[in-house]
Length: 174
Image (cartoon, rainbow, N blue to C red; front, side, top):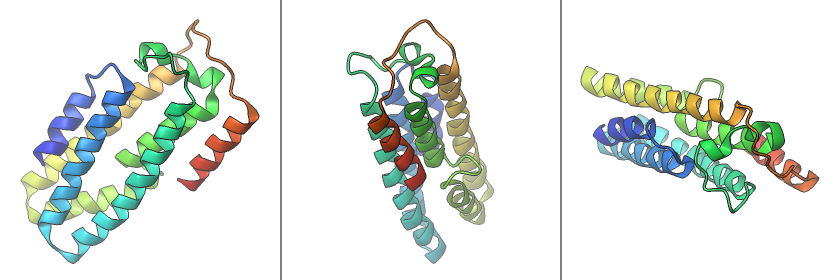
């Protein structure tokens, strides 16, 4: 539970998008360890299903980061306004992040609810700390959303048709 809570807390204060996803991965590892440690049929089922979403989400995330210029340092400041020049890349980043963190209407949401309900079965401390950690991760996604939509003078190269098709198909797969 501490891995989830502390890593989600530290993700809020990061200035580079790679570090944010690194803290999300640490939080996901904490969730996985907690689910395995509970040793119930429901927890194993949620663990296996969540593993599938994690793999797909991280593939889409890395594919989207690959589409951003290599000279970019990937700080939030350098990604301002990415949506306006590379909309499919920005949508792929957001879809992958919110799928990993369990925002409603994204693939990870039902698994996140199941995880939190399993934690509440083991005690209110586990339930509330898990819910708080998951909520903080979703709020961090709001920060990512803000910077990707914020209009800035920095000009990115436009996406070509192949990149748009690749990003669109990866979003649909996720």
